[in-house]
Figure 1 (cartoon, rainbow, N blue to C red):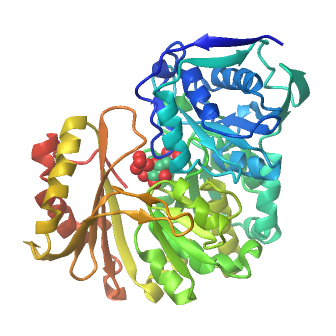
Figure 2 (cartoon, rainbow, N blue to C red):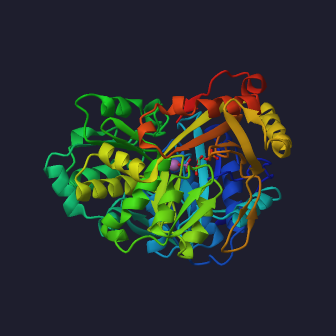
Length: 543
Ligand code: VG1
Ligand code: CO
């Protein structure tokens, strides 16, 4: 076998963000760029000689090309086997499961998640470790450090692998196995949920709608929802993965999944609607006439998880990212289990899950998952909801209202200002940070600031410390504002403002969310001077 060592100059911008390296496709197409990053990943790992590497992606534009590059580089660097999804496809949770099931050394997941795809849109590469989860900061920091000094990469010379044919073959001294991307994952779901009960619910006329957004979950939804559970195929929308997601953002929120939202709010709406994102790790849950915020969904799933066979023994604990609302905390308190608050990004849940300190985790950004894999999992959340609905035989709206009546309602919203100038965004954050010490006691409208800080996370398992994970403003009475900059965007900066207000009184549970949060929206403007600093008078996306 011919192994070539190719010289390359370092690229200064290969720092992995919240979830791997994300850039525009033309950046990844820069000669040597993709190779330099993959080599930096391999150079930051020890002991993979002869071991297996899982490779798969969400099917977006440039996926197949990068997979061929990664396979040839894995061979040249000494991996013994590559497991790749047929057609180059693996949803992020399915990749996590495959790494665990096949005891692989790690995996490369190619995705820019909910960001648009196409020749001038986004691409991404993320490295996952042997537990199936995103590499922790220690490794992503090492990858970045290596990328700044790298001077060559290694690649084996052999032709393109036929990614469409399932089977095992040899090339470049390495075994390449093209695997069915769906079956193992679907089988795992059958071990966690009562498929017979869900199927009975569907047979009894319960209508389920699912929007795959022309992204990776299409084939998974067709197999699991339609074939195994009997859901009407006519209600599974956009099930064919497309390289450009049909020109849309595969982001399951109220802006980009508006068609599903409108359907679910219509008089003849199906009983339950859901959507997933580009790489299949996010979920949107909408019952007939009721949108369930992701923070609420986490709390409701945690409170009811014992109704599904995979969780019948209860939860070891719950974990949420810091900006996620406190709704799940109240469930943990009631269940008498541990509650953990981590920085944004799934990589921070891995240690807690591995140590058995939590069973269910979630983020306000439509991510929910459990210890069955080490990634968030869109279809898992849909199936857990369906299992709960099949057991309780109530509508989603009734389950939501019951939950609020028992635990109180947390009004919650996130306002995003996308693609603002990086300098203004940094200045805005710096100004708030400077003012933190002076904020307590300040009165804004009806609200009084009780406390303010910059969130630092101390990992209870490995002792690592992660600073600057978001600016938090706490108000008397329990309301909270959080400011942070996105770590997944590819143009300019995205400012995220998270708002929450707890309302225990059931008589106050039917307010419009934005109206209920109006004093906090005004406080955010007063504290951050958003309009004058960014030139924007409204957020780009409200979720
Ligand atoms: C966003 C979300 C975060 C999520 C991350 C990756 O990060 O806020 O909760 O973990 O995306 O999700 P940021 O840094 O842009 O706020 V995915 O589905 O894009 O892999
Ligand atoms: Co995603």
